[in-house]
Length: 315
Image 1: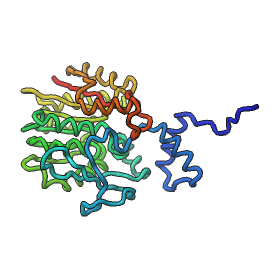
Image 2: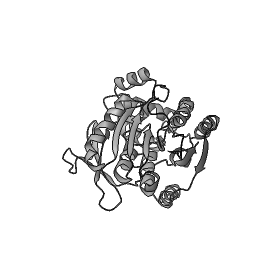
Image 3: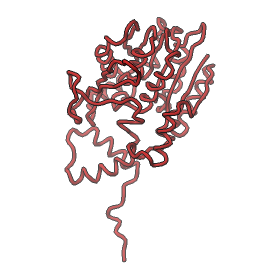
Image 4: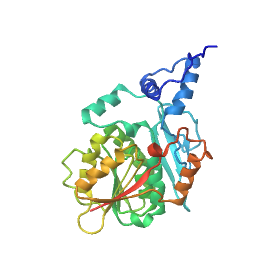
């Protein structure tokens, strides 16, 4: 009896091209085609909308009330920070699984990637949660977030840690527009902390006005593209305060040899670093639960691509 190979599962590389194709297309495929595609793409994609589920959030309307869980292009999320008397944090971000040609034009024009618009990456959630557990690291400090995406971690630090100033930056001007809108939406909750957005390309050299002025640099999931490693390491060295203690706190998965290659650039820049795998008991518990099958909320969870390591960089 012959085996029917007509319904073999496509290779992961083929499925990833389907993800790109579907993102570019404006219209979804037919229902029958969609159902089989969704199952396969669900298995191969590393993307996760909820990540480690460390900070509860839900979609709301412009009035802050619970809203349709399937909005159109943008969605407004309300985050509930896990500490007493915490204000609500509102974050606007892209939701629709498609991109405009204009997105690619902006990337080409500024020599940047488009990852900040794709989704809220899990490492950002981890960075935000970690920051709330280490308030003393930010109190009365000048902080800058690099490659911020929608700015969750920077906004959390501005609201919860009594930092003196928080600069939330990204190299993509479209992303910075979202950051500024999110700053404006939460401005009443910053107390005395100064908060501003900034378009900062890691290859730009016109940063003399902010060079050597930051006590703390934060970043998450910024080591994916190897072509940006040298620029990121150079930017960190440029921005870290030279007098007194200063530190860059980065979170990101290993992703094969990508993180290791970045750390080579860090060392060659004259900076020191440490890498910590188990840095928070709750995050580690959820990580192990995902590995052992106790949590099925993150399909295709794989530590090398999904679990953020903590990288501390100092002069």
